[in-house]
Length: 117
Image 1: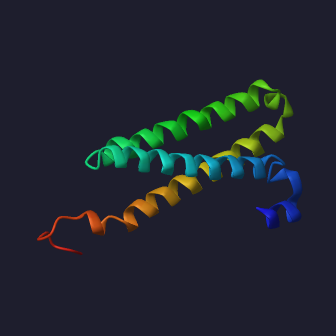
Image 2 (image 1 turned 60 degrees about the vertical axis):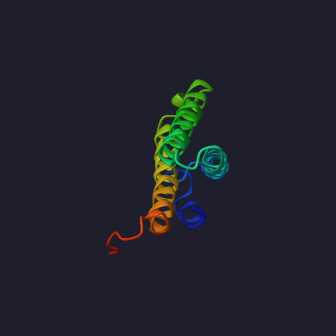
């Protein structure tokens, strides 16, 4: 992000993109904490905990976009599109990271006797 901002400026990377990055870092830590807390209470409820974390992340992300638009972000013209582009790029980056971390940790949860690929 820093390299793109130095090369192209605010035309590609919105000035608030670093705050959005921090928001998603805190949000990811919050959803992991929520998932761990729910798994500690019920070890068999992994899917409920995981999808609960996804719902929390989705609702808080939509709330962030709505706050940005409500505070006057919709009047920026091209700036609105760069904010939304940066937002969705970071949203899918963090969602991909979460999916990768779950897929990389599936092996310990597989049942013994099932074929391992």
